[in-house]
Length: 376
Ligand SMILES: [Zn+2]
Image (cartoon, rainbow, N blue to C red; front, side, top):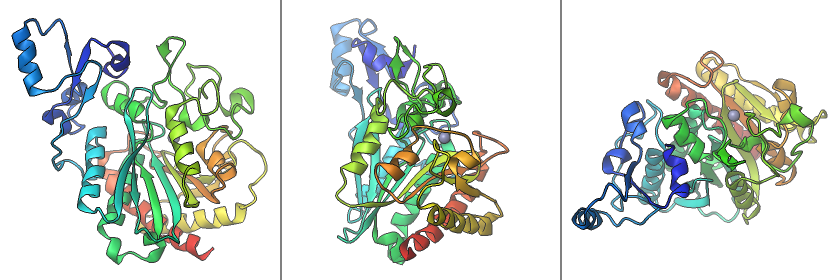
């Protein structure tokens, strides 16, 4: 049985998240499988059993219960990859410990009802411009979430000593944009890329990075796919998915103008920008190229890693309905990039020993890039 999908299919099923689950490191495959404990009404045979359960936990059919008592997770670090609950606890701990600059909000709910959480870091300066940072729109790209949480942590913990190019910004950081897929890669299928949408009566998933409106469905099967079984399935219409809608509504609903949009992926080691679905170069080509080159140079100077810079279609392949084509054209965010992290060698399974190196090179790349953005 698929625990995630069962939440909405069967009201007779209860889900309990225990303290043990809350702190399960992702390496333990058994604890990963036991992400949730299902107790059917049949298993609670007597009313005594049932009462005993109810006195411990206020069970409501079909509702995911979380412990109210929030304790500091012991497991957030950049030595390994983490489950969603650890990442979300980390965000909430930042908000609790740094309330003057951190706010956590839920910008939407996934197909299966999981919260899509965003950390906003801001000194509340009215002149700030906004920065968008997301990860794990493709769920198997775990290093993206590790890098984005590292960036959040670094900014918050070093806020007083960082330059204004970082601190005079409203950071909008979404470490897991596709939480259903992300959990699925931890529990069932490490190589799952899409969300967990159901079309045609079964869970086929939509490639969220083909579900944005700009150029959606262009170039036929070359830029995305109309076939639900394809890894590039674009969905039945633009923004058919709650995860892509959450990005659109947060950005278009913001009163602060966005200047930078960074979507982290893996594993091509590239810094790419629009267009993904057009042949010509974008109007801001030179600035996008130069900003990307500044980032790439700082990455190279950190660990000797070379990230190529260029427009998406030239460096990868035709991709239509991507978030960066949308953010650049519709949301008018001039510095819109996809950053493809390590590694070409290990593909999606980047060894955990390389997490911290990847984080530090990207942090250096980002901080140099932010200086460039402020100067242009
Ligand atoms: Zn990706």
